[in-house]
Image (cartoon, rainbow, N blue to C red; front, side, top):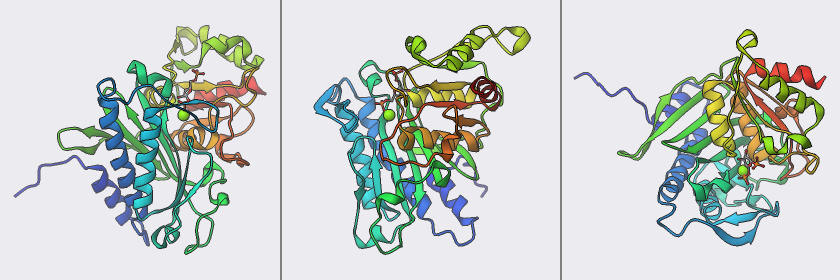
Length: 335
Ligand code: AHM
Ligand code: MG
């Protein structure tokens, strides 16, 4: 009898991938499955936000001094617990936690990977029903197998990621992840509770017509940013335009759209925040990895994001990221 089902689930896809790699152990597949499970649990809560007591603040502040939302806490616990209970992760670091968490048990100490994640990105949008997301980056640990992981395992440049991805809790829920082999997107099929391959081999269009930036900060930006934005506003049919400005204030939603449609996303330095707002390890590195694998570029205006050597767990960086040709035009303003 011929098999008619053509759509692969996330598990089927990752298992097929690892079986084609010589000497692969399947640990990355199992890690991605664990992340998919946490994403489904978070998705359930996001979907009933407004009904369940999950909206609003939990009363504390995180390491960045920001007010913590209840969903931040819930999601952080879900991702941490799947990683701790799985067999692939030696420890994790989260935007919501001051320090790294070393799992330090026999299985974890023999695991290959550490994970850095932002459990709920775009927290300010939770209460108003705008898409939010989760972002993660996976690194091969540098410390010796059999020992607990250390801070140095987490202070690696983004170029060392073996995989990175995000979940967007939007009009549908999607998990997109990249390895060096490519970027693939999976849509959650609620009827079977599985992520199913819906966007194989995602590439970021070389040219785009969307620019995403917080215009409210315009007068705080450096001159090269102001000049680039003014250039975007002057695009017309003769020079690749006109451009549209699109900005949710939810990096995952903004970058998901720009990855699929083409565009540039910017969170530049401001007069008040010389390093911008977004975190290098939890937000910028995972997206820089995904966008580069998809054919785009990511810079802080001086240096490629993936080449930055982190010196602290929660450091911030300006970021300009997206379609290759748009980034090259921006870089011509930086010179
Ligand atoms: P968060 O991780 O606390 O939610 O903050 C990150 C978010 C990004 O998703 C978004 O791009 C940015 O903050 C928006 O900031 P602003 O409102 O300053 O434009
Ligand atoms: Mg965030």
